[in-house]
Image (cartoon, rainbow, N blue to C red; front, side):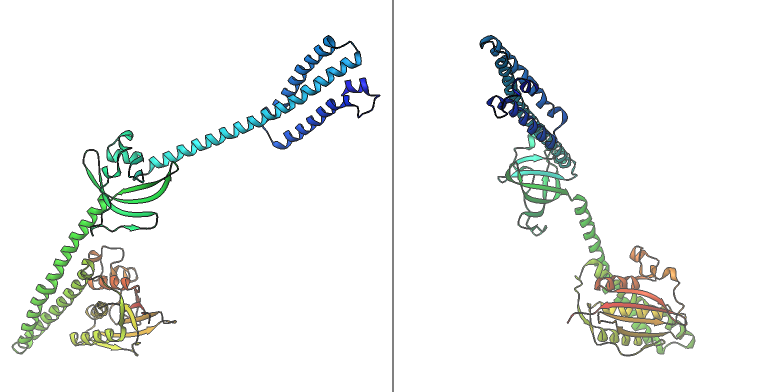
Length: 461
C-alpha cells in the first residue's frame, strides 16, 4: 500500500491500478476475521499468512522478471507491475492458505472422530468380552458371526473355529416340552436349553435372544446364563418336598390315628380308675390331645411347605371361621374360659381353608402356655378405619412374653422349625398370615399376659 501511495497517490483512487492492492487488502481483512471467528488451532491458522507470504514472494519475483526484463523500462510502470503481481500472489496465497487450513481442520476432525470410534469399539469389545455370560451373535440363517471370550472359554472353541458354524452346533434349540417355559415379546425371547461344548460336555443354560442389527444387517444376540446350580437347587427342593409330603402322610394317618386310639381307650378307662389314678389319666388325655394338635399343626405346615396345595387366596368368612374354631377349642379345653367380646364383623377376608389353623394355634398357645389353673382367653375382632383390614386380638392372662422374644417366637430370623419359638404353631401362623398379605404381632396384656394381634386384608366385593 505504501508503494502504491508513493507511485500513484496523486491519481484518482478509482484507477484500475488500485484494484489489486485494494483487493488484497480486503481479502486479508476477510481472512483475518474468518480466522478469528473460526477458532482454528494456532498452528493451522499460521498456514494462511505463510502461504500469503510465499505467494507474494513467488508472484513478486515473477513480476520483477516481467517488469524489468520483458517490458520497456519505465519506473512507474515497472513498479506498479511488480506491485500487481505481488498483490495477486498474496491473494492466491490467502485463498490457498484458507483452503489448506480448512482441509487440515477437516482432516483433524475426521481423525478425532476416528480415534473416538476406535475407543468406543475397544470399549464395546471389552464390555462384550467382559460379560460373565456366554454371548453369541448369529445371523438370520443361524450362522454364528461373533462370540465373546466367555463363550469361547466355556464352549472350548477358538474364535475362528466357532464363527461360521451354525447355532445348532452348540445349542439344543428352544425347549417346549413342558419342562421349561419360554417367555417372549416382539423382539425378545427367553428360554432354557442345553449348550454343547467342543469336547461334548453339556451345560443347562437360560438364553435371552434379542433381535439386533450387526454390521448393518439383522442378527440375533443370544446371551446364555449357566443355570446348573439353579437346576441342582430345584432338584434339592423337589427332594425336600417329597420328604415333607411323606412326613405329611405319616402325620395325617399314622401318628394321628394311633393317638386317636390312645385317647379313645383312655376315655373308656375314665370309669375304671380310682381318684388317685384319675389325675394320671387326665394327664394322659391332656398330653394326647396336645400331641393330636401338634400333629395337626405339623400336617398343615408340611402341606404348605411341600406344595400339596397351591394355597389359593380366596374370600373366607371371618365370623364363621373364628366362631367355629372357638367352639372347638371350648370343647377341647374344658378347664379354660374362652369368651368373645363384642360382635365379630360379618366380613370376608383374603385367606383359605387354613385360616382355621391360624386361630386354632393362637387359641391353643393361649391356653397351653398359661400358668393359671383356669386360663382365661378373650377374643375381639374389629375392622380398621376405611374397611381395609380385619383385626383379631387373642388375649390371655398367662405369664406374658419378654420384649426381646416377641419376634423370635414366630421363628423370625431363625430357621423356622429350628427356631427358639414356642413351636410349630406360631411359625405356621406367621407363614400363613404373610401369605394372606396380612401381619401378626405380639403386645402386652394388662394387667398381665399376652395379646396376639392378627391383621387380615378384607376381600374385595
